[in-house]
Length: 205
Image 1 (cartoon, rainbow, N blue to C red):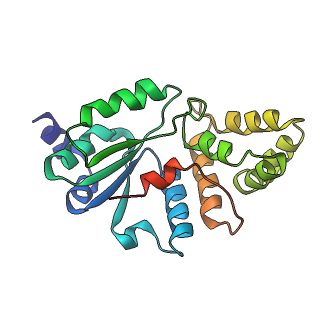
Image 2: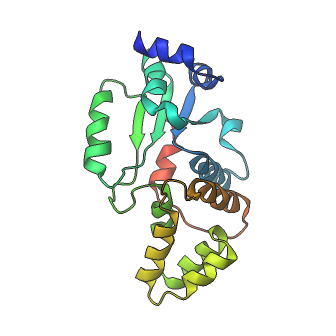
């Protein structure tokens, strides 16, 4: 009853999308959606997830649980891309226990606590060498920020610089910057790497 009450208050048709789709990916923000769409198109010769029946839905402030409840009731396959927020065991492994009786619901995240959200996970995937990291940074950072990055001495310092740059604080506009960076990744023809768990997010049995 609580879920129904919540659904009646929600604007838009996102809950209807969960009901009508057979395969759904839930993400926290638009930057996550863009990056997943880019990865899917790289693997599937330019096709986007929605062309193959996979609906990526940004949950925003509603929270995952409301959408998951719909999937639990009607059997929609729901893959949830979760930030581990620095505690994979507590925030992901423990949360999975609630859905053990629902194999159609999967919570997926990086298992590395340092990769607390999608951005640091993407940075880690492209930090095998200084050259690789700079190539990735040139895509996702503005020219001004990229030039500041290059002044950092070591690979570890450069990686820390980008991770810190992506961390959001209230009122700092980082949310928009994350989207701008995701758009740049979506549009680029330059090769980049991504963490393997994102393949899992886009894979349905």
